[in-house]
Image (tube, rainbow, N blue to C red; front, side, top):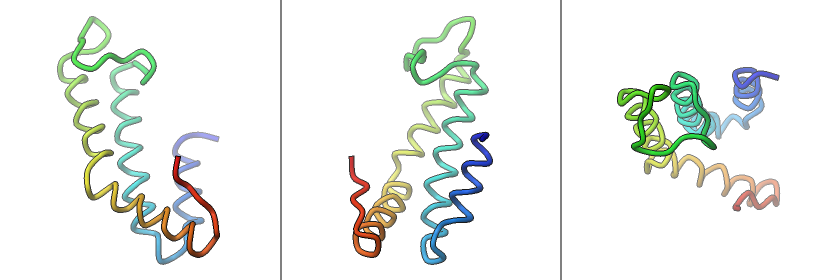
Length: 96
């Protein structure tokens, strides 16, 4: 299953009242994954601020920007809503 198919599946399966939250979380995560793909690196191999022949300054900035978006208040609030719904409705604890 591709990353896009997985994301579409998650969004389609999301409870109706959580569609916005799942969309916010997924598209922020996808933005970071896309930035890594565009840079030709992985989270494991990437070192913030270290550019090379493989990772340009622009690609490094794109990764950092996407990471900041994933950690933004908007995305954190969406994730919190998903966690609360899972706990209250499904009796599932999604916290790490």
